[in-house]
Length: 316
Image (cartoon, rainbow, N blue to C red; front, side, top):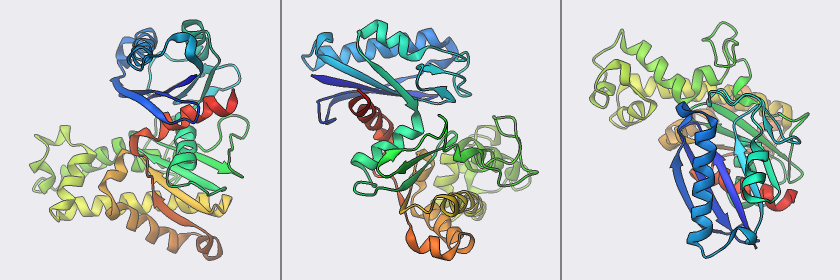
């Protein structure tokens, strides 16, 4: 018997088929055509999963369960996406029902970053660690909590680390509030802050990598920082301080053994991780800092789909 896993993102979706031990047999990445609405996205995912089943010599009758990660908030018990800021039109979407009808197997859904945390705990940087917190720094910022080896969900949507207030009078966040960590340190927010700086400092090397100020991305800032560009280095320092404040808050509340930081923004590597650790040393309670290690995620963009596979296995 095989298990299917899906990690739905705002720009790309990863689908995988695995054996009973959650060892991936095959996977693929497809674009998420969110502008075309949920039906198109779901249809494309269904097609990609059926291709994996055929490609690996399986049949639909060999599939025992499906795990799906998606941005929320969501109602896990009902299998419904309540709202997904990065996926227009997904309000009150019966996600589990769609795939139950398509494959006639149990379907389990959870917050995508929860499943990244689960993936890192089962197969990544957190193997053997019973209590950990996970930050995903990408287009947005999300979190996941593992307590005693299991996901902690609160009343259903715990660990919204990206929506803790860091600057009360800071920029507006997609959630509608002001000064959230996500509005300061996500990939999207890094690009926005950079564009603001470049309006006053247009001789930065950042513009060697972007055709103009309006098209600057966080990746351009990372490339310029490798050239020693002063503005790029300043932006990464500020970003590390913001994330470090968020990590410090979580450490002070949860006292975890490990904090794992993943997501596309972490591709900048040690430059950002060093600043995060330095900020945590200065801002979190010393006794709690002594208990924790802060590491980069090990699974990169496969963390979520691996977590989805484990969700299906462990919830079935």
